[in-house]
Length: 243
Image 1: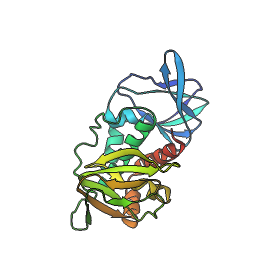
Image 2: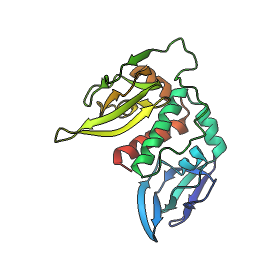
Image 3: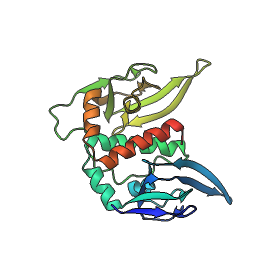
């Protein structure tokens, strides 16, 4: 991979452009922003160890934001071909987790989450390359799968059905955070953050899930190429910061 040094104030990616590369930041900082009615709205500031511009590699769609250097910055250039190669070398579960994190980040930044991600669509809904080690659980409609504050013992990959993610508010109301269907992962954030559950999940309809225990989840994540592991960790940090 090529490493380059970039001066401050250089525009790396322009909103609306198609194609191009992503960048692993090894030194310095970049800002991610959108121009609205001639005014710059900063979405995020990224630093060493984080990856900028990868959304364009994931969905191959026009760029949803601009990225510019804020100071002298060192970058490793990541081509789409390299990214796809490393993603395909990752365990299937890691690809599902990455897709889940992408959708969460889009939602936080006000970007539609229903747009296609062709890089993921060919994956079968299974976390392993063999079926013999899988554990599946079935949840009836209305069943609470776990509650906010519970200890996290595993993640769930939905084979069929629908779940609702929610939490109680201070005035004893229920705030619905979203829904997830077949092919989606839930419960992974607590494992990635090594924390208790941050929200509750209930089956909306009859739902079948593949259950991935914590130890197996961690083994599969470690088996992913370094670039993909860095991207997963970067996304977790951005979601925690709400950007």
